[in-house]
Image: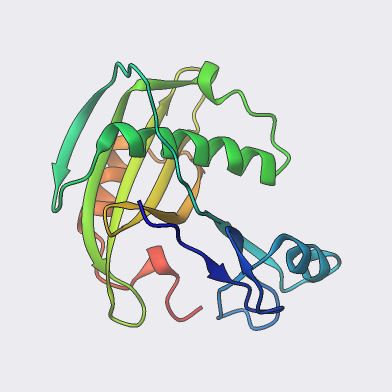
Length: 188
């Protein structure tokens, strides 16, 4: 697997972990390093967190018992590996928002919805997006993760979090999404 590095939009240094933020121009998403994130986050009303990008060189030796109950794909991907990313994405979201994470206890990670689509972003560039939705076992909030997939590997989280929308409704929303709208926050 090739190693991928991004450059911090502020200090211009290469890093293997970057944070997607808005800090000055509310329409522009930038990847920044941890230090620049800290410098621009505090007391900034324009600050918005948009996910974490990490270079990953990893070999997994796992026995995974899962059963997705809606697996339509517009392209091929290794669902078992991306399922692990989806679960980690929700846990990381919990940490970033200071929410107490009880994801494994409160969500059924063996039965979930997943769907892969190719969608054009705000600039008209085709992106492979994969949705994973996990149904809550204890409450009304369901967890979902949208993953950007590129060159056969995880690229980044597009969005992740919790919603009162049912897993079936979240899946239908994603299936019917028009290119460039809502998911990429075009025009914001």
